[in-house]
Length: 279
Image 1 (cartoon, rainbow, N blue to C red):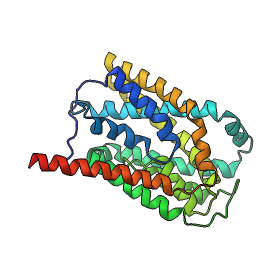
Image 2 (cartoon, rainbow, N blue to C red):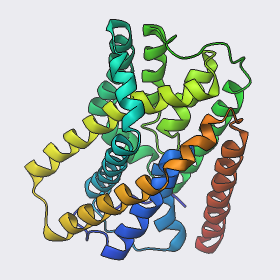
Image 3 (cartoon, one colour):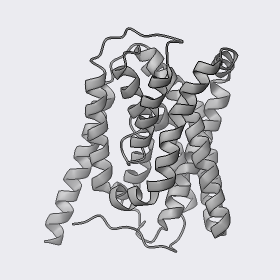
């Protein structure tokens, strides 16, 4: 059975569905398990009727809850962010700029194609599995680079990782952690780099999606879903700040990779069952 793409012009998420997905955003964004995969797979696994949901609206909701989570991170991590800003220099600016360019270009040119081809449960499960393998392999690298040692080449590597994370299930957090670990950064520093380069991309995506939605017009149902999802995502991310320490405490990435592989297996098993029913 092929993954069906939702038709345009369908209904918006209900208030309760938007709240559930917003609550899920916080913990899944702070751990390298792909929040986007969870936002896509939970409705499918729970049997919510999303076949009529406009794909542009669905993506707008995902960007909105990511924006709510990013706003919560700005508040919850304000001391760390202020400390990093005080150390900002030309080299650090180059790292951030080079980490932004690849995902910005890829998003502008290929976002709709990626969504159309890889946005279904099967593609998302594949992204979870591929990202897991990348994390496992990268985490075997030695931890020899620490704070303040990132160079422009590292920024470019992180940028390509963020561009790859446009594929559903890959995970921006997981991909940038893998890229930083592959380049020899400690787990704690890899986590800091991952958070640092994510905020500009999330902000840019939210701005772009907002402009597109304004041009198309936003109906009352979608406005309500966006508002509820964003508010709940903000609250859940703010309440889940302690999860960041789980990744920072020099812990291996294999538990997160194992969880991702388990979720991918659940999805593939359900798809096989649905295929058997269709036959």
